[in-house]
Structure formats: structure tokens, C-alpha cells
Amino acid sequence: MLECIVEPTGPDYDLLLTEQLALTRVLLLNRQSRSTINGLTLKIPRDLIHMSATDSVLSRLMKVIEDRRQNPSDESYTTRLLAGGVEKIGGKILEEAAEVVEAAEEEDSAEAHEHLVREAADMVYHLMVMLGYRRVDWSEVEQELSRRFGVSGLDEKASR
Image 1 (cartoon, helix red, strand yellow):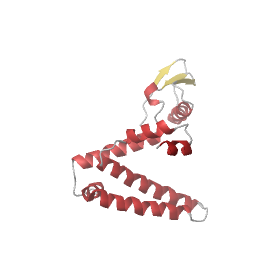
Image 2: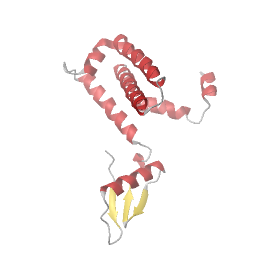
Image 3: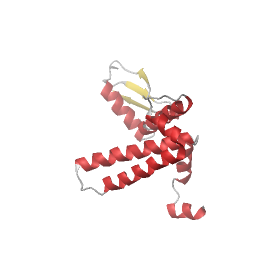
């Protein structure tokens, strides 16, 4: 959950939560750290400006995977995958990748869209389990993507 500091700067400083959330989203999307609305100044710490809601979910997921690796539980699907190693996790990644492609090939509809989203989430989850198994932190993947940002994919591939 994104935390922010709200400082009253005028007589009317009762923002509705929805207004706070909307302003927070605008600030993050525009990479700003401070804005005022309805007499309130909303500040977001600079180190959070580059963090999106998705980053937060993926980071939290990686922590759960790491916890399952360190503290296995018989009740955990993640623990079972980790116990199966590269072979089991890799098999699931391949299975989920095929399901993503199948979902993408469906006729364009709301149901097909949701199906693709669910399959993509499954694939990302299994990829993150593999990363956790091999002790690769999600931030390392982000750093690599950041390094490639703004570089032609063709140029980047040719440089390897």
C-alpha cells in the first residue's frame, strides 16, 4: 500500500479517500512528488515516485516466494514447485506460456481479454518462482530492463 503524507495548507483539508487516491495516481503517473488539491498538499517520498502499484505487487510476491523457499510448508503450492526444482518449475512455465498464446488467439471479447490476463498472471507467477528458486531477485530483472530501456531491441540483441 502506498503511504503518503497529507499536510493541511488551508481551512478545508478534508479530502475524501477517493480524491487522495486519484491525486496519488496522478502524481505517480506524472512522476511528481508534491501537489495540492482542495487545500491539502499531498507529498510522496521521492523514492516511491518510480514505484508503481504493479512493482509493489511483484515485490510482495517475490518476498512470499522467498519465504516459502526458506520456510517450506506442506500446504503451499509454491513450496511444491520449489521442491521440484528447475524441471518442475520449467515445465509449468512452458505450460503457462502455451496457455498465454492460446488465450491471445481467442476471438476479441471481454471474456477473452480476462482469460489472457489470468494466463499472463499465471506465467509471471511461475517465472517468479523460478527466479526465487535460482535466488534471482526481482529488482535484478528490473535493473536489466531499465538498462535496456531506450535501446532498440535489435541493437540490444546484436550487442549480446
